[in-house]
Image (cartoon, rainbow, N blue to C red; front, side):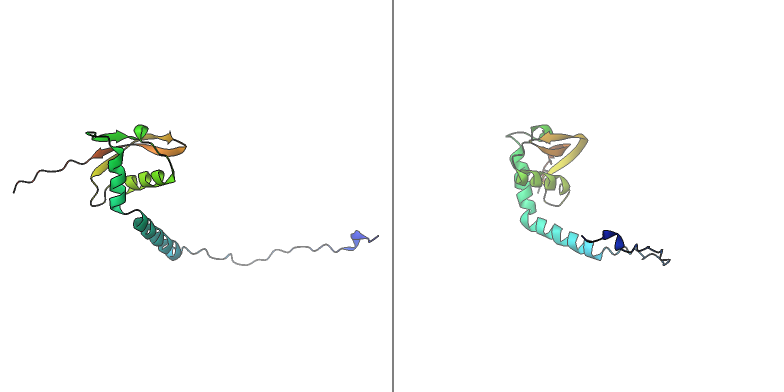
Length: 125
């Protein structure tokens, strides 16, 4: 039988050196974020988001609250969040009012918010 007590204890010693500097190089993260946003815009263009929001409103309805929005899958959830984030972009025919709290809609936690159709101005020519 082998004697296991013949090993040497190795003492660690403190190394007094300057710590490595942490650089705040956000070049990669900025590039990654730009790429991700471009992919989202390609997959979810403004027209698709606008169509989704329009589908939330019933006939002759001008506002809808989070409580009445049904989310059936991840795609609905993504479109809803993008609709909220991109509401102020050019070409959107709705606005979003953020309210207090969050709601659970079919297992998806969403902000309590109200979507309203924007009024279309009447132009006299």
